[in-house]
Image 1 (cartoon, helix red, strand yellow):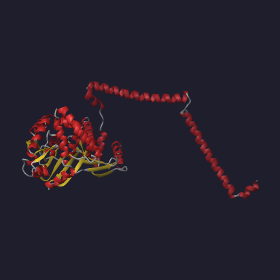
Image 2 (cartoon, chains in turn orange, purple):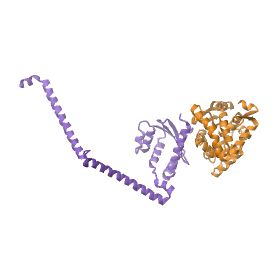
Image 3 (spheres, one colour):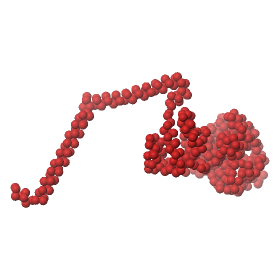
Image 4 (cartoon, chains in turn yellow, green):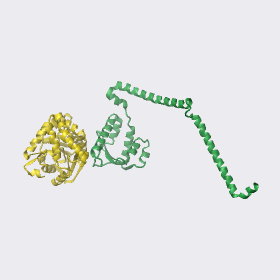
Length: 251
Length: 216
């Protein structure tokens, strides 16, 4: 992507110096971390649970697997993976944001999910793990906040074992014009108001809507996966393309 | 292909319902666990829906996407599947039209037996909300109410038919209908005989017109 080579990048609809995007994103998530789960349920009407459920099915995670959940936030996927991999397996919950990671760790520990879960504060662009260490890598609603997406994809490829799979769950583009219209109205008018009412922070939710629009569409992201070196890439549209699940295998 | 979100919603609801039913019947649950690790692929031909039923420690899992090995595969219309679950004669149900089975048939038969074994314990369900004593009384009350409604509807139906038949004479009684039906049958038989007789006479005229003329 051209923006990764320039000194500036986008933060929602704004253009900011590349090195500052990380800080801006961090501010957003520091602000929403405590109420992140409630807001997810609230804003998506609970549908995000179904998107994540599908992601887990497509991941094909089984007992004994080692899984990396990047941008795992408050640990929705990690909790499910932890059950599936069992005692012999391991799940690493990684997030760049300390606030989100802390909320996630407290939440999982309170629910008795421990023993096969590790927590790592890490940047997706340069993952601090050895080559070929994971069977499955997932990143759910995280990639659009990453400054250099190509570097992140290459980094994920590196840590995957050969034959391992990467799953990217992310907002995408709807192909239905009517749905797009409703979705745009909802994102730019309703979403910031709800954000303001519940968390007292309209800007973070305005950023959410804008960053979704700036994120590459299904075909572009699939091409990026191929460029990074993934094979047998594919994607599933969900809820009319509002969300897409991309999959790629490390050769 | 149906949007995965819709399929996920359906499967997720069905899975929670099945597992909460299972929690209430430990006998069935224990028997189901003997199928631990087995996977059944189900294809509902009329709804164009495919899903996988997996038995694990937490009970039943329903998946839209599964890439592992499956022990058996059942392809049928949703009607045929309901029929399969409620039919007492599983072999007959399995051989009915529109049901296709691949792989281990034993697993399907076992699941059918388990589904039939399941007894819905309404009293336990009420006890979760109201407590044992109240639930027992409430359940007994509901049973009494049910049998009262059943009796009342029988009596009501009897009274109405009696009123219409005996008081208003709008409808004939069953005796009258039976006697009318007898008469009708007798008449039909008589008519048949008469018809046969006429045909026989006609035949005779055609075969031998001369002799008849001489007689006249």
